[in-house]
Amino acid sequence: MDLLKKINIGIVCYPTFGGSGVVATELGKALAKEGHKVHFITYNQPSRLDFLNENLFYHEVEFRSYPLFEYPPYELALASKMVSVVKNEKLDLLHVHYAIPHASAAYMAKQILKSQGIYIPVVTTLHGTDITLVGRDASYEPVVTFSINQSDGVTSVSRDLKKETYEFFDIQKHIEVIPNFIDLEKFKKQKKDHFKKAICPNGEMLIVHTSNFRKVKRVDDVIHIFGNLHKEIPSKLLMIGDGPERNMVEQRSREMGISDDVRFLGKLEAVEEVLSVADLFLMPSEKESFGLAALEAMACEVPVISTNTGGLPELQVQGVTGFMSNVGDVEDMTRKALFILDKNNLPSFKINALKRAQEFDITNILPRYETYYQQILELSAQPTTN
Ligand code: GMT
Picture 1 (cartoon, rainbow, N blue to C red):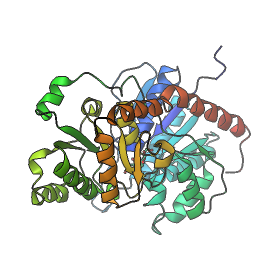
Picture 2 (picture 1 turned 30 degrees about the horizontal axis):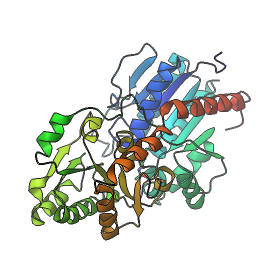
Picture 3 (picture 1 turned 180 degrees about the horizontal axis):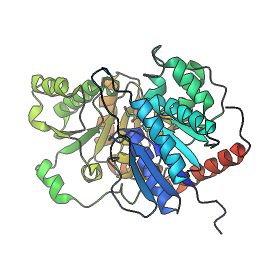
């Protein structure tokens, strides 16, 4: 028997390829399949919102510019849109992903609605850079602290991110850890032998990196590790994604004389197709609150070489699903990558990566969000003075 009430929920997120947007969209899709009604509120159709379902809705935040505005006030347009969707669609709950500016916009929407006699509980999910990088900057910190404390529920994607949040912000709220998840129907090893043959015609090892190519991802380290590996074994590197560091690393690979074996593929819709033919995934990030891209790789049976930062030790199992090294230790990462790529070792790493990924199957994690929503709705049935 289905004990959980079906709810009408608004999900606010970034619609881009970034981790928080992906998690929010996949969560919404899964909730819709379970019979909840899900309203996405954002400035563009979320990139992973790729199927139709009678329970899924999309509300675009339109914001007008005006010659006076050097910076169009997106947060105000978002808050106004939240007010209108909550009222017109009779939402039960708002779930905002990434604190900046979604949590503060939700607070404003909640206050406006309260002035009209409508009570809407707000759940904020902290994803990573909203806490570890951007949020702690003095230009945002007071608003981030306030809006987290004003949320009815707060979740974080790893224990480490929860710890960091308490360390750097004056937070009085309980933070519920709900790890990220993976849809194993989508992310699974597919038979793509022709593709592998085209990229690695002589049976080379295929190394993959995906990210937004921001400084925090240390893409320069990816090139260095690959440069080291390339000296030892026939190998190719595929770089997926795009961002500010891309030109620099393209140039670096030319300087190192390895550019013929490094391909930059840009942003890809079906990253799982590339992961299906990969032998190793590199994630040498400076910070990573969870490492969703690594989980996607593991689900496609790809072992991971990563740093031991943030939430990565909560995902990776050292020496089992791959290895973790200190940030910047490219020599250690190279040694460990060579160990994994040894033909005697690779098969078991691949199997173990998949086994670990299965623990994060969306079917295991979704009920945790549903139970959490239920708790928040019950607690919020008695409105506080917030
Ligand atoms: O990785 C990014 O820079 C994107 C960022 C985001 O919020 O879109 O990702 C963060 O959230 C992901 C989903 O929860 C996590 O898997 C990533 O580890 C986290 N990124 C960082 O902490 C740098």
